[in-house]
Length: 114
Image (cartoon, rainbow, N blue to C red; front, side, top):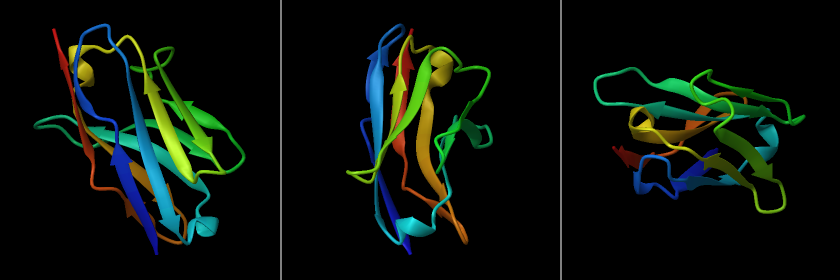
């Protein structure tokens, strides 16, 4: 099993920044892909950014140049640095880990006011 705990969400004005954290524990050696997803009210959950065990990253077009995904292997923690936030970035942000199955965190709310 893998346990994921997100933190760092909150309320921020447009143009501001937040850094989300995802602390992982358990059988994390089995994980080969990590990612951040978000779900806005009334919309489906969507990929925001992903990172593989080799460090390859991928971003949704809507966040390229503004968000950065990273991992600290010593701390077993994944981060999402979010800059130049827009109201459309509002949603619940989830950490996801993919190994022999998919694991999800409980989510953290990000609200960007205009």
